[in-house]
Image 1 (cartoon, one colour):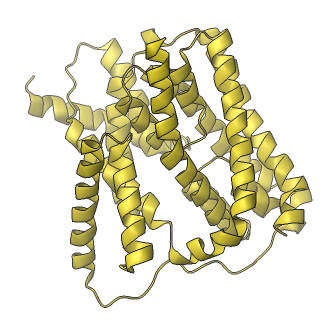
Image 2 (cartoon, helix red, strand yellow; image 1 turned 90 degrees about the horizontal axis):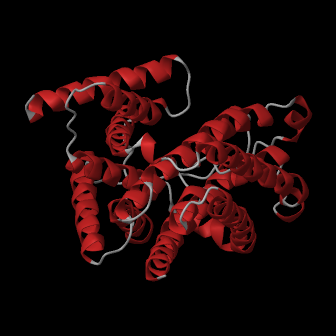
Length: 355
């Protein structure tokens, strides 16, 4: 098969996997579905698969833009007074991740850079992109660990916030505004942000900054949207699903199950890690957040749960929680992870190789 036919076959398999996972109500279907479908068929058939890496790069640029667009001027102003508490809970959550990275190294015999990347409580797409950029990390281990965590968190968190005993604790504070009016036509905003995000990606890549495909667009979008005052535009949901499908298909072709180390140890550790992060978030939501931030238990829990801005925001709307507080905490942790963790992992990789 030539590249065109191989590409079309790969795309069809990814689409089938996405719609199948959506039909089965599996979390993040347009990312996990193509990843699993392509992973399985690429190993059990002799078909030739082809997926241009440029597609993955531009999809990650779009995802990075959407994450940067979530950081508005209102959130920045309100973050100032909450920084001490947000820093404390973020470091506490990260400490739990460091503990499990040590356990992975000790009991599963995973090299420390891979263990650290596997344990960081970030988004599945973003962490896998970072892992791929950092050479020498076992991408299969990282994907396995984060996939188990995402599934458990997306399934368990909505169940927990719907516990009847917590329903009386929800709040209905008004949410923050997420944009400003502008006289610029939408097409000009789209062209401007596309150009800025691609330039930022290329500059970050030239400067050898980890995860340049996402960090570049995140940073430049925050600068233009918050500090320059050029409002970000909304990306259609179908386009974000397409980006997830492209990234998921790419990841599926990159994974090699035969490289998964110590399977019997990895599974219980991945489950224990997700449950520990959920438990820490719930305990802080019960004992710290109401006293320090004057939030409801549900709002505090959704603010701290490591499930991502989009998923936790959707659940927050459904249970009438304070979405502004949830967004602030989720955005702060996102920025901490994507701005501070890549240099940390890069340093760990260099130290590990040096030894």
